Image 1 (cartoon, rainbow, N blue to C red):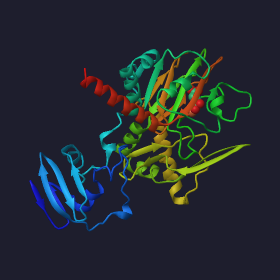
Image 2: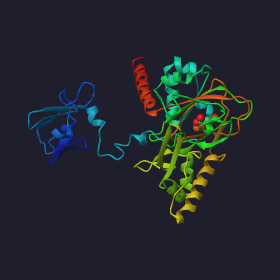
Image 3: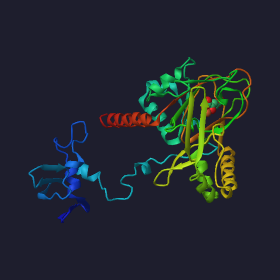
Image 4: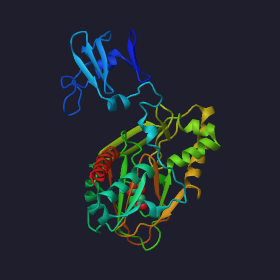
Length: 368
Ligand SMILES: O=C(O)CCC(=O)C(=O)O
Ligand SMILES: [Fe+2]
């Protein structure tokens, strides 16, 4: 069960380097009661050797050459397995649930009063945003800036040049086409920012007499379709730099990224696409036509019936979505008064609130 080697030991078929064990000592001199590490990498002896190693009731005890004593519980060792593939890839355990145009909206719709009064429903709401990238709330009081109260349920408002919130209402001289009745093609907001606000909330206070229909597409689902059907175009959109810019009297924001952005593992990280703020594409002459074909085709897929979900927000309804994954748009020009209030927030806080809630609810289940 336990064998000792020059640079490491093997316990329960798990190879563990001595320096790694020393670096992960659980004693109170090495690990603060907060769970934060007190060890400095500069102080670690990479050639360190154990003096004595023993197993007692499944726990591993080591006395090091300098007399320091370490003890590793079964639970700790069982959760490490650093040699295994995906050991570091928590994202692999958190695969998003992709959806198409036949989205089951009722499954991701929650009553706001329930979210406020029941922790399990609040958990389900936040989990829907994390997994589906989108959730709806009903019966949100039809009150000015109520969306701040909604954000308070999981995190913080992200201020931008539009302020802490924005009014989606037709204006005389708008700084942004969002503040007109015109239709808006599917887009992500603030593509010219890095980091981009990762969540957007839109709360309907007044719905249009006609039109003002909301369109939503799961950009990750559409990107997967593009990859399956047109792999070369997918490759182009993940590797051709495009610049987005927003400029007015007091703001000049610019960012160059990709329409489909991947992380180091090659998995989808974000969609960055906004027809209003994309700048003239500059590419070698021979590459321009290919890029345009890919860009247009991806937009066609995003807007296709296969991908696009339509709904009309009614007063008191609010949608919250991942602005790095879900594209939103306004399908038909809004006729008559229509008023949405919008704001941005960030998904890291939402995931943190969800994780804490999950732990609390699991604990309550166990102690019942
Ligand atoms: O009016 C709408 O439905 C969407 C407006 C919009 O895209 C925005 O404010 O970001
Ligand atoms: Fe928008």
